Structures are given as C-alpha cells and as structure tokens.
Image 1 (spheres, one colour):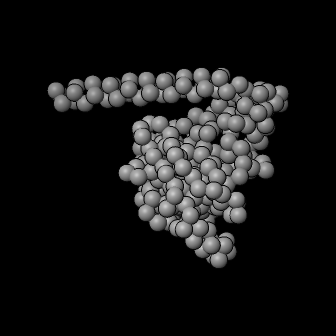
Image 2 (cartoon, helix red, strand yellow; image 1 turned 45 degrees about the vertical axis):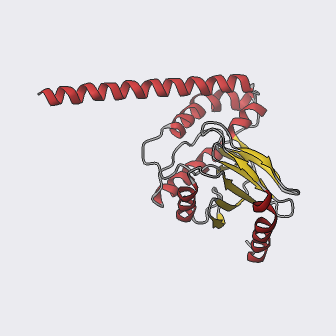
Length: 233
C-alpha cells in the first residue's frame, strides 16, 4: 500500500472525521450508534462497540472507530500485529487510541450467500481453514468464526472478524459450520442454488445458539458433580 495514500487519509481523519464524528454505544449488547458522520464519509456498518466508515476517495481502506469507553481496541490491534499480511485477512496500516485504519475486504458473507443462492465452492472453506491455521501458527486462537464474519470473494475465502482471536477458550462454531457445509449444503443446496429466506436462517442461528448454550450448561453441571464426588472421596 502506498504510504503517501495512507498519510493523506490519516490527515483527513484528523482534520475532518475525528473532530465531527458523534459515535455512541448506549448498550453493550446493541450496535453502536453513529449520531453524526461528516460528509463525504460513509458508514459501512456497526458492531456493539465500534463503527466502520470509509472515505470515497480511499475505497480500499476503512476506518474502524471504537465508541468512547468501550473495550477491544488494544486486543484487536495486537491480533493484527500478530497476523501481519495475509491474503485472507484484513491488514492494519495505522492505529491510534480507539481507531484502526484497515485494508478493506470486498465480498459476500456466507450467510448472505445462502440467502442469495450463490454457490459456495469447497475452495472457500479450504481457504478459511488455511487462514485459521495460519492464525494459530501466529499464536492466536480463532474464535467466534461463523457465517456472518467470513466471506466469499471471487471464489476464495476471507475472514472478516478477528477481534476475539485472543480468547483462549475453545470455540466450535467454525467446525460446526463445516460439518453442515459438507453434510447438508454441498450435496443438497449447492446443486440446486436454493435461496434460503433470512427468516429461516435466523431461526437456524437462534436454534444453534440455544442448543450449544444448553449443551455447555449441561457439560458444566456434569463437571461440577464430578468435582464434588472427587472431593468427597
């Protein structure tokens, strides 16, 4: 990436964006709210703690800004520093307190691919697998990887959200998605190019969340019983 291009964007951030942007995170479980965004900046999306914006003159770069008082900036910066440059991940070109300038990833999430009936070839899954293996080799722990934060771009796989890659607890979301891909999607949906309604996808997502939560609680309960029995003995 041309450094003069990045420096020009940083100047625009300092002179236009930061002084005028009004960003709030009212509740940690709801998306952050952009109350005011100066022209010509455009909003790409919001998460619970941050917003992602871009400037039309710099379409290949995005700016992720954390809402005041919300955590996650330091951890995300460390993840990007460990990842360095990799084709399946974004890359951090500049950081200051609460703000990251990142390479923009273009593509369609696997979640939206299902809704639009776009075929997801096995190469996409293999690319994401390879990217997650690379992240592990850099001392990271791929976490919370699911259909809404991985994308397909020109038949290749991309990983969009890496903010939880320092969390060391085991996460089976990607392994579960792969099982569904090979057992259900590839033999049934892939040949037919069926479009799956968002209402059905949301029901599947909520059911999965409930089942995994219930199974996790049962597992914790069994472990407690085992520990109590061991203590008595």
